[in-house]
Image 1 (cartoon, one colour):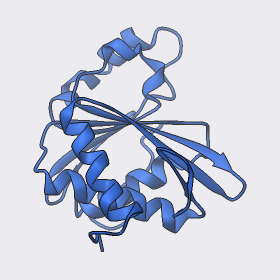
Image 2 (spheres, helix red, strand yellow; image 1 turned 90 degrees about the vertical axis):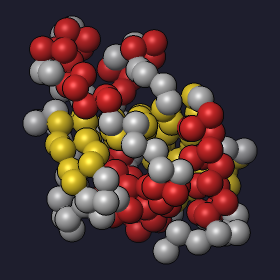
Image 3 (cartoon, helix red, strand yellow; image 1 turned 120 degrees about the horizontal axis):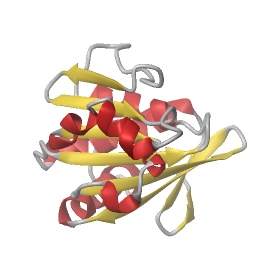
Image 4 (cartoon, one colour; image 1 turned 135 degrees about the horizontal axis):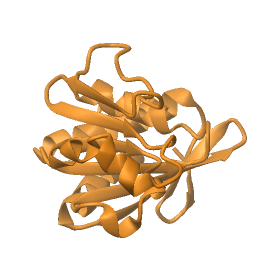
Length: 171
């Protein structure tokens, strides 16, 4: 995939976005992380759930199981590893209070994918975490990452080795 700028990747279509998610998932599995947060931000339709589907494929979730939890707020999945998938889009009036009232904090102790993490203060989120940003560009999207902590740096570096540089494979 082409780089837009340092730390940014252009994903031309849905299949590239799924493959990026798969490679991120492979990096998490390779590093044997069982407590890790992937925070995914972007506008509506930017590809957040599509990226999560790729992660789910890497984690061997049943095919077609990873879907947007917009109305449920959270889905739990079991594959090679247990992971949760949260979508905070609907938290509006008092997002932090709504988060706790829904009992969503229980999912943060494991492997967790969070769409719309910006609904809560940045200081709320635990580490280690990897912040991902998706921005639509034509029919594709730009993926950029920002890490917090050594585990996130290791995930991003391994992802870049496999997906970007192609020095290792994530098939």
